[in-house]
Length: 67
Image (cartoon, rainbow, N blue to C red; front, side):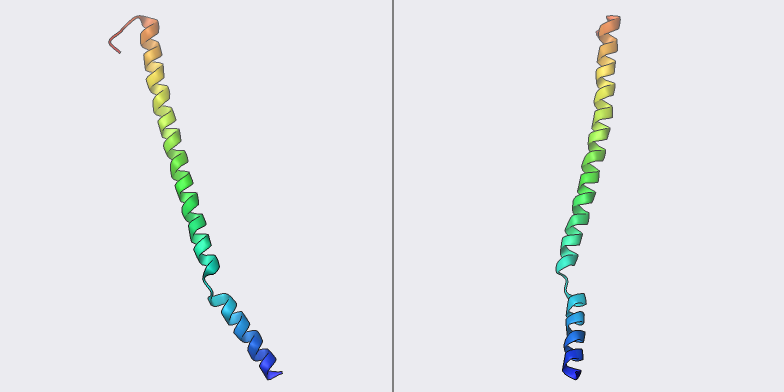
């Protein structure tokens, strides 16, 4: 009985001290942060491109080549 209990406690201690899953979780969080940064940059770039094309379109419609 004592050996069984000791083995059970050792197994639980081993399970909670291993760091295999922690590394995978950290990589997952890093991947999410990089994805958020890429999405934010794409949204900002898209808004800037829309402004440039609208300015060009307005210049073409008004006949003002200086824009």
